[in-house]
Length: 456
Picture 1 (tube, rainbow, N blue to C red):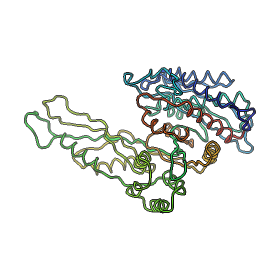
Picture 2 (cartoon, one colour; picture 1 turned 30 degrees about the vertical axis):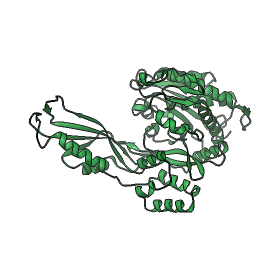
Picture 3 (cartoon, rainbow, N blue to C red; picture 1 turned 90 degrees about the vertical axis):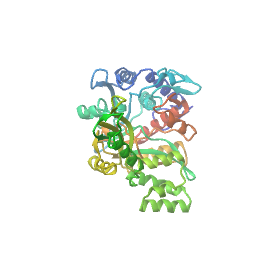
Picture 4 (spheres, rainbow, N blue to C red; picture 1 turned 120 degrees about the vertical axis):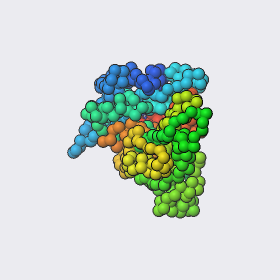
């Protein structure tokens, strides 16, 4: 199916979708499990595909094998007056590890079966890199003229924090990745609120300020029980941490999300949302008519969270250890100071244990009041009439935090379907896969967005 959209020639959406599938299959077949990453070969695939249409760039390595692909498509019609800064289409090439025996298919096979592309990275997030690559090739081949540069950047090392990828490039080669806006991962889920569909657009994320809780006491022989042990101290601290109910806080993205979805509800729910905006509480938020997944998302994004994940301690079964350590995945809201966060957790667990910071990431936000956000909303309305876009905060982290001078929105949309619930279980899970029709929808969205926002 071809459609005229104001570009230099008609767009063959079916071909665009097939190209995105082809690129995704190829990218999945590069095993970029991080650690160790080994993203360089996949980065060269991206660069070579861009060279096929006359574009050039480079693969930048922060260390041997840790390559990121950076390609620039210069504007054919630079904006009048002050030059417009680039739009970056971005993603990451590394993936998390797999348990091969638990997979139905080869996790690095990139198989296309019954309308699904299978493999690690099919959702997180080689699919988005593949779609962006297919779109860039299509636009160049069609001779589309844009009024700002387009950057395609496929980073290494997002899954372990980005120090060898986005963070390294921002520090050492900022000239390659400096842009006004970026489209990244983290959004695009279609959610029903009231009588309307809303696509969630990531405009902020929590910071990973992780903690270590250490309990110390006298050791001894386990055949002679002691009343005061490191295990006892840590156990009581763990119970206090579990029972702690942090304060409910509405950051700007969550506040704007609630304001955006409120008109879709009857008067009583609109009044309840107005009361929450005036005096937020989890009791009031949890009483809203929301599905289970959305309620969990709001619970995580309206508070600072401290989730115990790893326990270290003891070296022999017959020895009472002198020290036991608990690692805690702390995620803090934009506006929370990491040092204050440590002090707050210390106050919760008590002074029989010591709380230290393992990392000090702050949360970030990108104001939805921008021309790009408006273009995202207009493009969604064009593709799914009646649907709207709502900003939201994500509880996880992305490379957005590693490029602090760029206004980043996470958005890779799929139309409403039962697959959204399935996808949430497949990211970092077994049998990761994406439906071809969802990849095609997202590819078409990126194409329409770029041509709308960049002046074609």
